[in-house]
Image (cartoon, rainbow, N blue to C red; front, side, top):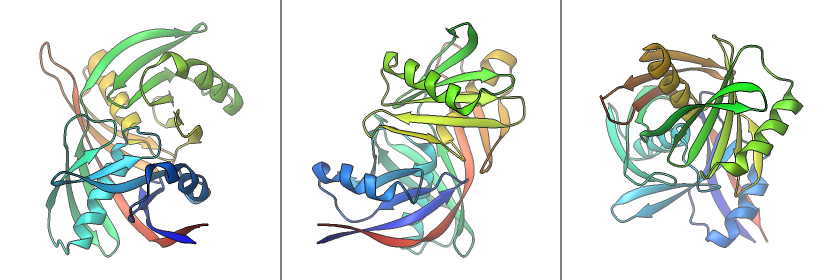
Length: 257
């Protein structure tokens, strides 16, 4: 029997199991399957040269998991004030800049600069207007107006995702107030209605910045609110930073034969 320790982290309701023991790549699928009844996603803490590395369950990029991992590392190191934690993260070709600070025991605030948005354009989803926003590791489709029924939304994303080259795809239904994120991770085959989505927050902020000139937005989602701030450069990619809160929910072990 092999035990793999993990910590359960809660960045804006996006429950994340961060596995802190080394797990061979060929065993990660089994560990992920075991842990998915306790969280929305699983990440694996490793190293890449001098940097700690976060490898998500399907090789995708996740901003919420990145800031949660940074908070875990800062707390483990005994940090007492604002701390910069650079990370290597799956789905991102460059180091990801995270800054975290403790607010109270077990509660941290985190800020992460997301990978640049590579593409923003309108698309047609079978007669339904949408906006495609893609970045390293994940692409999101944004729709406005009344939300679809859950089964219809899931069917739409499953049908559309194979045409997108990124490791993960999301459908963000936004009614002008609440964003409802649905995310499909291709490698792990998981389809999750997330309570909070960092990359989705980034995509919505980029969409609002480019289409309406709104560069700062408090994006409300089922698990809470994430602040997004966009930087627009003439002729350059949109860069977005997100800020949220991370709660430590406990620790456990995944036991495999």
